[in-house]
Length: 72
Image 1: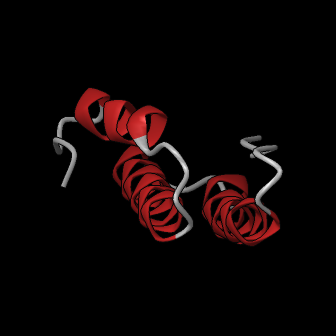
Image 2: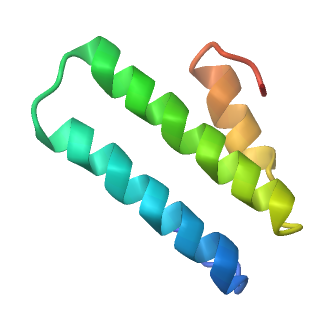
Image 3: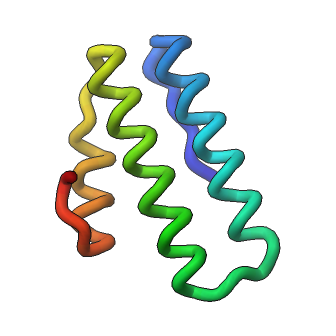
């Protein structure tokens, strides 16, 4: 389970919502492709929130690169 404890409540809340969405897919016993898509959606949402809330997006960008989609 991913959490964010930056002290920026708006960003931390957005990451929590994105994590809930990710877990809803993963818990269902989805296919690997569906899980990867959920992971990508989570990290994109977390990255967007970090940027919008002036937090560092570097962790999320690296995770996206690790998933093979770059930082975009």
